[in-house]
Image: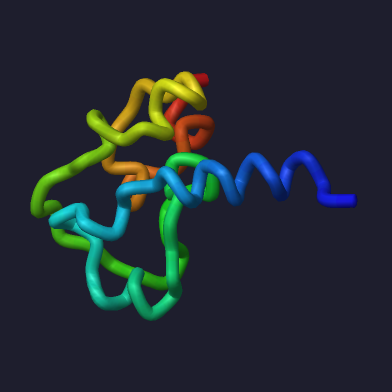
Amino acid sequence: MINDKDTIIADNRAKCICEPCPTYNECMRADNALLFCISGKSPTCTFDKKGCVCPVCPVKPIRGLTRAYYCIRGSEQEQKIP
């Protein structure tokens, strides 16, 4: 039986639009990194802000996300003010 969490992640990953983002770079492609909004910023890649597609991502309303530049700033949870 497939874990519900794994199913949710796979479903969100299929909807994720990180890869065509102007900020998404070769380092992220090599790591096959996606869903920064859930998993947090990359611990190994560095970024130059070149634009952000987070505001139009189909995962954003599904997950109730309100932030942007997750690849640089971290997940929604990481960006919350204490």
